[in-house]
Structure formats: C-alpha cells, structure tokens
Image (cartoon, rainbow, N blue to C red):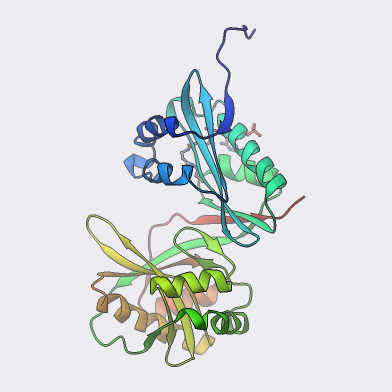
Length: 287
Ligand SMILES: CC(C)(COP(=O)(O)OP(=O)(O)OC[C@H]1O[C@@H](n2cnc3c(N)ncnc32)[C@H](O)[C@@H]1OP(=O)(O)O)[C@@H](O)C(=O)NCCC(=O)NCCS
C-alpha cells in the first residue's frame, strides 16, 4: 500500500533546475549519443511549445516536449525517461500530459518520429489515435567532386513560388527539416532560403532542400525533400552528390518516407540504405 510519505511522480512544466538531472541521465541513453541534454536549456525558452518534466523524489527523471514547427504543424520530441526508472509507467504519464496539452493548446496536426524498434512508443502513439504516415529510411552516398552549377539557391522572395512548385510535383510529401517533418509551407521555405539550404535544380526542373550534419568522423549534407518529374529524380539526386562535395562534405545523404520510386531513383543515383533500422512517422489531428 502507498504510504503518505512515499514519493510520487509529478509531471509538470520543466524548470531550469531540471537541466543538471537531464544532462546526467541522458548520458546513458543511446550509448551516450542522446542530444536532449544539449538542447534542454534552449528548449526551456521555447515560447510557442511546452517542455514537461517528470519529477520523482526531488529529481527530474523524464522529459517530453511539444514544439510548434509551423502554423498548425506541431512536433512531439524529447521523450525520455532516466534508464534507472524506465518500465515504471513514467513514460506513459509524460506522454499523456504532452498529448493533453496539445489537445488543449495545439491546432492542425501533431507528428512524431520514432524508431521501428521502439515498441513502447508505437503502443502509446497508436492508443492515442496516431496514424503511421510511412517508414522513414536514411540513404547515403559518397560526395562527388565536380561542378554543382545545376543548383541555384532559392531566395526568400521565391518561397511562395516554391510552395506552388512542390504542390504540383510532390503533393502531400512531407519535408524533413533535420529529424522534424513539416508539410512544406511559405514559412518553412522562407527559413530554408535564408539559411541557404534550399535549391532550384536546372532552372525550374526540380527543387530540393537539405540540412548539414557534422559528426567527429564525417560531414554530410542530407536531402530532406526533393520534387521534380519522376524521370529526373535520379539525375537530380546524382547532382546532389556534387553539391555536397562542393560544400566540402564527404557524404551525401537522403532521409524521408520511402516508396518504391524513391528507392529506385536513390539506387540509380548510387545511394545505399544507411543502417537497417527505419523510423515510423506518425501524425494525428484532434479527436
Ligand atoms: C521510450 C521511453 C520514454 C518510455 O518510457 P518508460 O517509462 O520506460 O515507459 P512506460 O513504462 O511508461 O511504458 C510505456 C507504455 O509501453 C507499454 N509497454 C511496455 N513494454 C512494451 C512492449 N514490449 N511492447 C508494447 N508496449 C509496451 C507499457 O505497458 C506502457 O503502456 P500503458 O501505459 O498503456 O500500459 C523510455 O523507455 C526511454 O527513455 N527510452 C530511451 C529513449 C527513447 O528511445 N525515447 C523515445 C524516443 S521517440
């Protein structure tokens, strides 16, 4: 029987004092490659979303965050429980609180990406009415030397024109901004143009966006979205390998929802599947 003096788990908005606990327990998640400890201080300052903490016996032992990526497009991320306290339903409590917050404050769609192997997250998400949008795979190829003239940077005033182009060539396809997916819109394309990470290809025959990722032993430029005629897709992805090379990267990557046509184009352009683990991309609206 629970005694009055027993500690209970409390899910509450995160506080700056949680940072040290989060930094500490995330060191033992994903073999030390978890990023949440690094971004937590910045997440505390997000004015549009909400960061939650699970407190137990005076310590922060879990986190979850809802982020507004664009008007009516939200993202669930940072779902973590201290490995010493996993399997005790703390994750369920955090997930319930995050989803309840979004039901009350969010609009449009809420999405998340999780590994195909994370059965607990599939279980929780499906129970809350999330529907799987697709399987996300990463592909990579060596960057190539040679001219990258086929690409012209998108300029911010062209964002509206780009959205119309994308809706024509790849209706419904989601854009990976770097492990966060949105339906392309003027805001996100404007931001990508300002960051210099979106390009027209061969005039207006194609378009793609990418993000840069640097690790200790390799640097990559990864396609998060591409749109063009199906007959041009392999050629554009091959040219992208030169774009990556021209920016001093050694890897050209691709990461998005796969289908047979995407795989065919990627393989023709010399890319190979990176790892055998896929991601499940889920979304839901209001009940
Ligand atoms: C994923 C994570 C946050 C879950 O937290 P947790 O406290 O261990 O999870 P819980 O004990 O609350 O279990 C969550 C749910 O999964 C269910 N579950 C447990 N094992 C399961 C299994 N093998 N298959 C399906 N469901 C399972 C639980 O019953 C519970 O559901 P319920 O509330 O409907 O009964 C935590 O394990 C973690 O931090 N993992 C490492 C980081 C990570 O992978 N984060 C997710 C990124 S998307």
